[in-house]
Length: 125
Image 1 (cartoon, helix red, strand yellow):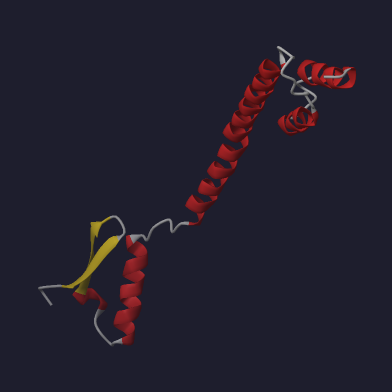
Image 2 (cartoon, one colour):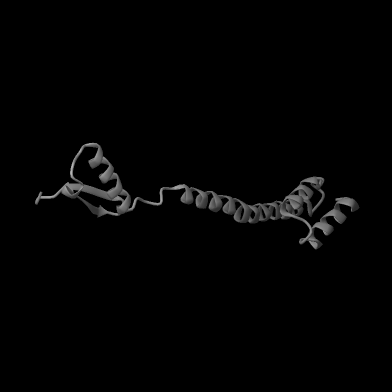
């Protein structure tokens, strides 16, 4: 590595609060290490830079991808139907009875499970 690349690497390592992960990855990509078989340290340098890039990508994915997933999940959950209340079903039953000219008091609304209702005719009348 030449002196400019070494200075860039030192700046990136020493100023972690100023540099984002994206800038660090760009700076690591710009490093050019000559692959010489006579150079004892080139393989170690490549390995170190590879491990550093892999670590930075894992940090980025952990924070940013997870945040995007959770925000989309929260948005989806808020868009879901919050559920139907028994009062809403009783109002619908009253409207249907008015349209069909039936007595509203002849029918009962029962809750079987949350969100599952049944409209039954009274056995009395």
